[in-house]
Image (cartoon, rainbow, N blue to C red; front, side, top):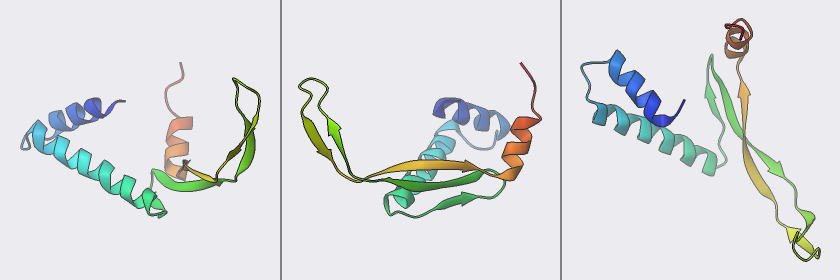
Length: 96
C-alpha cells in the first residue's frame, strides 16, 4: 500500500473530512514518527508493532571500483517488530 492508497482509503471511510485534511494528518503522522526515530526514540503502536533503531557497528568495507578498503562509520537503521495481534492476523489471513 502506498501513501496515496492509504489517503484514498481513509477518504472513503470518512466522508466528513476532505482528502486534503486526511493527507495533512497522514503527512503529520509520518513526520512525527520520523522525528521520534531521528531522536533515537522507540515507537510502539499496540496491536500493530514497534519501530526502533538498530545500530550497525563501524566496519571496514571495500570500494567496488578500486578494491581499496574504506572505513564505514556507525549507522542506524529502522527496525520493525510486528506485534502479536498483527503476526496472528497475517498468519491466519487468506492463502494465495
